[in-house]
Length: 88
Image (cartoon, rainbow, N blue to C red; front, side):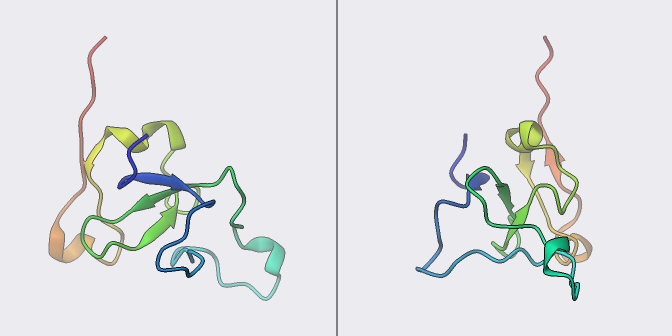
């Protein structure tokens, strides 16, 4: 697994816990995605923010197929994400 592209939440950036910008803002804390040890995150190649794969609808097993991934905020200025698929 690529360290730039995906990581589990056992790691932190600059000693700060990761916070997913795409997590639902809800009064019910149980509606928010957690920072459990099995959560897979993906980093935007535009702004370097980290997102839960669940929150951005990217299956964890497809994370490494992305050459470049842009979050919803960066998409208008950076263009679409690109993927590499291997043919079996």
